[in-house]
Length: 312
Image (cartoon, rainbow, N blue to C red; front, side):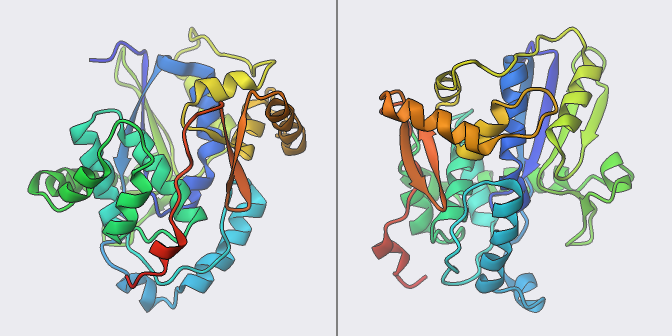
């Protein structure tokens, strides 16, 4: 049982560009409040197959073109190369759940690796060989074992529970704000949605869909004004030490932002380059940007070009 005064449930899916682009804001809340918030990840399960995408004329080209908007507006790294085909997210969601069952807590690293690879490499989220290769860089898990478990009854059952929980947004504040979805006849929390709960009395407050970091911060502050709230660090190397899975440039920019100021991406990148020159950081190319880590830190997820060319 957690002793944290607040808990937070994140509803998300590795295929959702909104969920991916919200990472800078989520990193800020994690830094400010640390283990005073106990986080839980629930997988949305956006698609079981690609029929819905195909029916609406959605194509790999349209996906790549849409990435331009996400990249320019929210700053997370993207590759603009169209993928070989459309892919559903169900198997990737179940891979996260398999990790959660086998190695509790590892689901966050697996989920992040899948997000980064989905938007910056040729990864197809429903190709088991691709999933295994990408997850092979995640420490503390067995990528082959994860893929073996994707279709196991226990994982499928837990995945269906996650999906059912996600589809309980009818009548919620999320629906009131127009932030809910309904792609299969049930009103659901969209990726990303965060529900904060106060441990003392069970009071729940929702931040449905994509929200600015200030929305999360206001909710947390009102749920428990006695919490400690960390300021941005004077030395950005502290951020790389705190976030062992690495940070993108936009995440660092958000983390260095004071109050409600706008993130200064250029200043953040200058600071990161200074760390690189001093040997206190490593820069790993990722899409149109980079993943920054401490020296010898987490390798970014990748997909070899020869694997990406194999028939899927």
